[in-house]
Length: 169
Length: 203
Image (cartoon, rainbow over the protein chains, first blue to last red):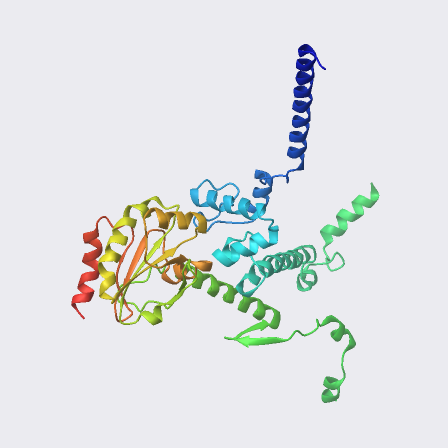
């Protein structure tokens, strides 16, 4: 038979052990939970936002646009990222909702082709014009060369006398 | 003798003469094919630029003009085409949840809709311009808006009407022509009625 003191010690020890066991189980239960979906960082959102332009505030990329409309758009990008959408999927969604003009880099189709063709053509044209101008500058037209008097053609007594004097010195 | 001399090619002259380029005479001036192509390209580009600038300066659809047809896909997925509404007065309101002035007229528009709905010959349509669906739905709920509303997909409707901002409201007569428009929020229910009622009395 246990004395009262022994019984109380036993109960005390049991309670402590139960408490320890319960806390360990609770810790295990916390560890076993599914990890919470992490909200994408502002940098991740802005990486996509800077490729988009809101039609309301033209010429301001979405990542730096201060309007409420753009703030809503950035939040929408964040929501889509949380849902696991890829960058391309999000851009496709924005184009479907708001049109091609939201893209910083317009797709190469229709009249948009001009954006890709004209600058290189203008550069090539400029190089060609520069080349022609430099060539004309370095090589005067043949007619002008022929028109210039040659030394042999000059038959001047005065020049002949100067040359003689120079030879004598 | 002289004829023979003319026929004998002079090698020196041949070397000296530059290769003859293909050219086209235009207005008494000789233009090489390359130069002509360059000029055509420049004029085509200028024409495109002029077209774009003129289109930008056109402004909104004007009163009396036949309104361009459009199809609105509502938030509920219903498709409403303007063609199907011929013979009815259509009140087309452009709005957005981020637009504070839109909130000023939201309640009046809904009250007007509830007034005219039983008649059956007036239709209200809301076009949500450049907005996010979550916020748009909250806006509709906040103002208890019951008439059909939908997003302006690819901004096609707003481009067709060449709107400059929101809110803008276009009232289309039973003949499909623009009867009136409002480029700012309605300040009262009476103002909305003042635009719709004359169109109903004339029919």
